[in-house]
Image 1: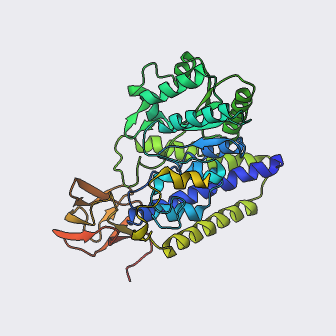
Image 2 (image 1 turned 135 degrees about the horizontal axis):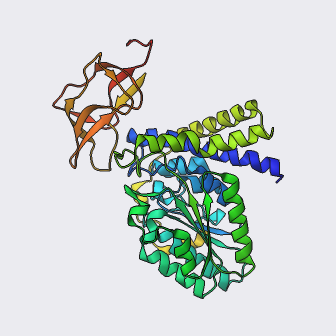
Image 3 (image 1 turned 60 degrees about the horizontal axis):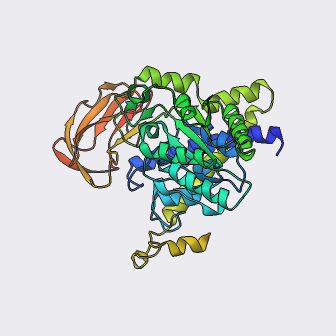
Length: 326
Length: 83
């Protein structure tokens, strides 16, 4: 891929994620998405920047907030939307919903509902890569809320002592549900905490897709060179509540407006591309139209799909059927 | 025009109880302002508008059950009238 194509691809993917989330949020409020969802609007650059630096053979585990990671890894928005609707055509055949978007054909082990579990799953994936001597890395996403969870550091410690090919990305939107991270994090410095475990770590602007991409590419190189686990603290912001419909009184309107108006990852990337004459207004409009059309089709597909047949309720409850797909 | 509806807030409730309107038809409403109070089986919640405008007709009266996802009123933006 040329650099110019990649620059435009960054934009297309971020716009597609924003469109998916905007439409899915509205459908969730209208009761179309059983169990609700976690909107990733505002955090697009973290997902797109990280995924662009990874290869097909790299394995990824996500978090409860995973729509942006899933789209950036190249998942079909139709199978994702159908899964949100818990339809049989969804990526988890309608059994998982929003938190269990997965695509094993893309080495994407998807989201889960347990805080910090993406780190543990990725540690296991890294161990597998190490044992099989593959030239690849495992990536585990976590939110800032997982920074004070025991399993996060148990997993990181094991990865460090075994020198596993593990990259941890903190998709750091600064709020663990309603709790501002500084109020509950001893030392307040995620990078320093990671370094104290004997791993390399750096902080990046999670609203700058290029910065996230470059940091991920660097970390991947260091891991493949045998330098052990790496951590990236990507500071970002979520525009909506922790979950759809949450009544949010814990952040000021000024703070939310400031991030939306001044630090938006899509707006900033558009400004960058326009200032370098890398894109035209017409091309931007075409990208937005294409994203709208794709999500309209995804919703139509989800609406038209059937719910799982109740006769199949006992399918997929053992590991056999999962292993047969690998 | 913004359609204001009862949001789906969990997996359990199909209906919520419309306790009280906080705005009357013709009142001006600011974005983010509460327009009604509802009760689910778990909590009492405010329904807010996403945009600013003038309250239109209320489609349900106080002290009634309303299904989740159903529009309860519309908010008229500048220059708009109700059909």
